[in-house]
Image 1 (cartoon, rainbow, N blue to C red):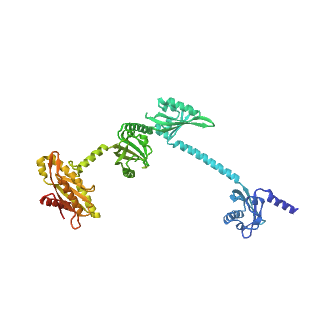
Image 2: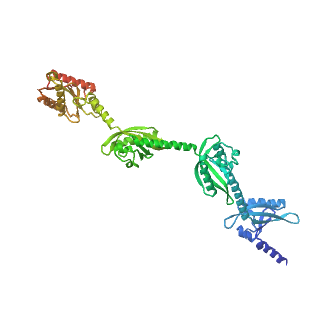
Amino acid sequence: MMKLKEQFLNNVLLNGIQDMIYIMEVTSEGQFVYHFINLAVQKYAGLTTDIIGKTLHESLDDQKANFLYQKYQEAVLTKGCVVYEDLYPSPLGETRYGENVLTPLLDEENHCTHVVAVVKDITERKLAEQEAMRAREMLIEGKERYQSLFDYNLDGVIAIDEDGKIVTGNRSLELITGYTNQELIGVHYTSLVVEEDVESATKYFEVAINGILEEFRLRMNNKSGKTIELIVKFTPIIVNDQTVGIYAICKDMTEQIKIQNKYTESENKFEIIAQYSGDLITMLDHEGKITYVSPSYRDVLNFEAEEYIGKDFYYNVHPEDIASLLNSFEQSIQHGKPWVAQFRQKHQTMGWIWSELKGSPVYNYRQEFKQMVVLSRDISMRKNYEDKLKYFAYHDSLTGLPNRRYFNIQLKEALDAYETTGENFAVIIMDLDHFKTINDTFGHDVGDKAISEFSLRVGKKIRHSDTLARLGGDEFVLLLKERESMDDVVSVAEEIIEAVQVPWRVDNAEFITTTSIGITATAENQSNTYESLFKNADQALYEAKKAGGNQYFISV
């Protein structure tokens, strides 16, 4: 009978209780040995009867065993129940919560022989508590967020009841209107609105009460009487599915609208300037693509403006000028400075025309390059005038030949080439024999024409690479480049002497004249300078004339 009773109790402990039950035997060495576990332990904690007879440290990892040992030791020492919550892994790999109740079993001498641990799974309850805690925290956080959103919103926020009375306002509203919150409570919102905008504000208020959100412009008078430009959005306040009022969110746009008006005014002025300006106005984006060209393109270049949109800024620019323009464009962006350049661009009917541009880079508030504003104009007439001035500065007006200034430049270049490459050259100075007699006999007009005729006769005997210049009066100088020998130079001098001997007919005057020539050339054993070459050639001319003229003389 007794045995049946024990079997019944074991069966109840093993199968009849859903909570996990551990019976731990307390050894004389103070260790806790597994004496009994029910099926719930095997089901929920994944432990098997293999642990029976083993200590905590033999069955569990050190961290878990140390923790449980402290709790069981507390039950032994206090001889009272110990209650605590703990985590335990399930056979499915989940982490679950358990509420543990440790009860010490005492013998007749009040010694603890066993500890019974009843572990109740409270995972669902803990998760529910955590969810409830999170919900409470979110609710509190939501209220705080709402209050912060209301109080610290940079836009003015007004809470208005369904009758149009102001309930409250935030701090930004005080800054916008100049009224304190207390001054506004109970006031009808339209009392703040400019009279001309009251009808519009009332219409949007009624629409918002019916659940339709709208955004609109509105003018309001602040406490000092100044008119404020606002963008207003009415949002219904809904409580228990009932609209009980309106939130009016007011963004002060006074300064922005002023700027916009100024911008619009500037834009209108720009359009007028662009429409009637004779200059070409071009806008380039950060990649150098054309985004705008003024209507003047049609008048100046005879091209339609649309042809340029989206093209590179050097579109229709002379190929020889593109590299220089690209470099100037990049330098302007890099250094943030305006740039000026002259270039040739295509006219639809006139071909290439000279233009001058002035470009100004534009940057945003981050100092990032955004666009380039370019003004350009036709400078063809100016360039032609400059070319004429340059021509007159370097050419003789009577013969059209280069003058002394131009010849000096050519001689310097020839000297530089001789110093670097050893390229020899010769200098010849010549004049007309008895030129004073021609002037005195036939007059200065015939004399001038004789000088021109002399330049033509000499010019026919030289190469394009040579330079013939008039020094003044009837004196000329000739630079012979790339000579192979002095014989070549002498051959040129002899041809010139022969050409000048041919009888002359100038207007009604007929006469015969000759020329004297002085020659010098570069040589390794002499000083080769501008001064020495001119001096030697001039001395040679003197010797030729001294010998009677109509001949050449070489200075070495």
